[in-house]
Amino acid sequence: MDLISVINVVHSEYLGYSNIVLWVLFSVGIIILFQLILKEFVKGYRRRKFIVRSKQLPTSRKIFMILTKIMVLRKVIRFLALKLSIFNNKSVEKNEEGATFFFIIANIFILISLLLIFPQNVSLWYVFLFYYVLFVLLITLALYTLNLMVRIRFTAQLPKTYKILNSRFTTEGDIVKVIDISLEDFDSAVKREMTKIRNVLRKNNPEKIEKAFSNMEEVYKDEYLTILLNLIRQAHYKGGKESIQQQFEAVTEEILIDIENRKDLAFTSRMYIVISLFTPYGIVWLERFNNQALGEKSIEFYSSPAGISLKIIIMIVLLIYMGTLLLLERVS
Image (tube, rainbow, N blue to C red; front, side, top):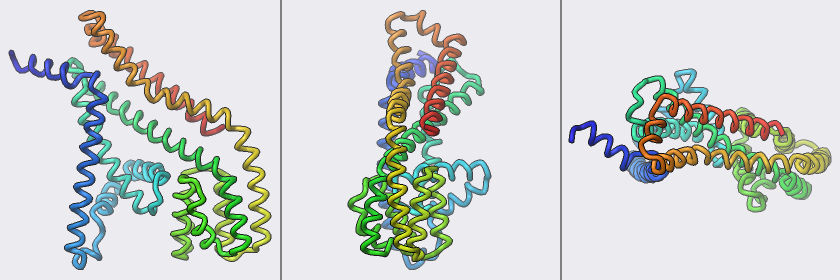
């Protein structure tokens, strides 16, 4: 048996489309394990070298600064940092470093995955490039969809947030203290953002406060969050208590009506978006089923230019469909 035959056997038995889910899960497990080991190693190293290294920038920050010298990478990492910030209560700098790590790991994972599952009979570089771009788009859409779900959940909790802040600000008069004692009463999505707000207000640095608030507005792009941030800013800088209370009450009533009007459309479109994310796996399993049921003719078809073109067209249509749903969800 020659080398090419061995490669084909290994590819069909262990690296075929049918095993893509197992390979993805295995790769994610390895990445998580590697991250935990690296985290413990770095923690121990910093503990031993704290006095010497305390004034130096972390390695992750250095990598971020190197990559962001390229304009395209700076925009990509900035985009990822904003999307990742919605899932944690870390500072802007920490999310930028996390986005850098995510960007590097994602690209390594994509390249390894493509090398493992890429059809042996496709050797054209531009087809390989198309698959790479397709993987990037699918990951981006998945991340954007998760991000969108969190934003929707956050918006749905805003009326309750307004009520809690309004009632306690009336008695306490200190917005930082109000946020601090109210954290446990907020939904998890709101709690993350309120923790960021509390932390940056405690620093009492106008520049950092404006930067943090601007990032939140850019992430959520919600007029009611912008109003809430303006009220918190006004309350922090000792604005009139009665005026702020009246604005809280007015906005709470308005947002309840608006959320109720767009609730049904949002729920329907979200379900279609989630279903569409699993469609690529259905295409893979359909090809596998046809290969087993029809034999060589099916394999020959899917390996031919027509079969490859069909899969590419399906993927493009799927991406357009998902993008349209996300756009409708965003503007609804």
